[in-house]
Image (cartoon, rainbow, N blue to C red; front, side, top):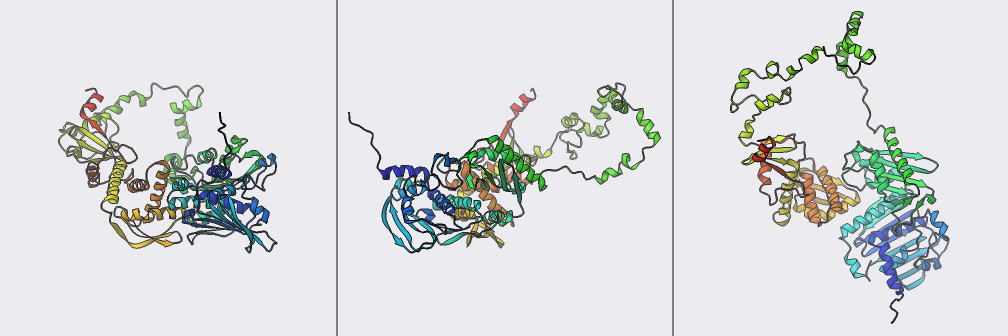
Length: 627
């Protein structure tokens, strides 16, 4: 029988290996930026064209490479970071595997220019599909410039799996931000299709955080700084009012390397317990410094998943550091010990406790129960307070009860509006007087500013006002995308909306659909948009909050739902603009919700699957009451 196992050719083996390291343009961005940092650069420039599909170029002023190193760096498992197996447990550089450049060269066309400090001539290399096409001396600045062109040109199927330009650009911006956040002492620049998205000057960590996340965080950051012999934690966390409904502003760095750690994230969430809603996420930018021997970063090719030798210690230390910082800056909930002025007017405070009053108090059963042994649990059967306990439920003897004429009045006769809480002394009053003429006239009633109660022939229905309005808006926006656009309500004074670069890229991607849905937005350059109009159901002056809320909802649905972008956008707008629970509605507003809900194609559920209403039949109600 013939042998069937063969060694793969180098170009095929390299392409297979590249699949683990270079999954999309953002993967190459991460690897190239980290190499520039390891080279000791103080200025790094990232240039992107066509969302990285056409070009990803990183230029740095680092130490550069010799001619031999420039050629060797594209070989698999060629690295200057480790020499022995022991070095794996003392790694402080960003890269160490020696796979990144080899993987990039396997799936793209690469041009490298590099010159070592102190030398006059640099080296130029062209590589195509792992094969060196040209190598020659060249004139170039000190440092390294590496350009990755036409990603996946030799793997068309892989290229077809890339997302839209806006989606790929968001991933690139995310990787850029993570590296730039970790090294505030380095100047970073990002150019996208000749447009400058970022220019981050050298500075402090706080300056870098504000420059990336936005100036509005300046007053919302709380400093974290704790040190022990085992580890150090420093950075910033956000005040509770900076928490958002979606993840995105959470950054963990271990020895300056960005990591993902659900375990440590849980430690922070517990530190914020009872301070933020359960479905919100706090902002944090935290750096953990510890001996590399206590952490294993060689878990995954992306190096974003790591393991600690003692996770419980890490969890406890991070949690306590956050709590201590929040308490130190008076962010934790505190007890209010200020005296209520009304207390000063009470007899116990304003009138002297004379000897006569003391003698009278000493004879009471309450005084004895507290001062005599074994009396605290004893009930005084002679107490007049307990003799007539049944009188508390006697309607006829209650001064707060209805008059005899009122009790004997027929139920069909209108009666004064009475709140049940003011008449809460008896259940009999409720049984006897429960009569609301609005229900008889089939006018809806709002319950706890959350539900709408409406009578139907077979009983009544209870409508969730937020879920119902969400369904109404969802179908309205869906029709707008398919048929008639929603007219925009022009703002009297257009507003300027400044967004983080990642959000600006997201808005740019959604702009055509947003305009159909009633948002009159116009790009104004440098991640800025002019808001000239919004859908008519958005309150004037609330345009910026509406768009920011829409972005948060969209990012939430993007991570949770396997639906297309238009569906995500429509669901996000419906959820963001729906009438929230807790808002008081007029009778007309409630009736409009009922009418529009049952005119929907699918009135029984909100887009997310939540019930919009529940019906109660008279026959079922009778059974509940034993009828």
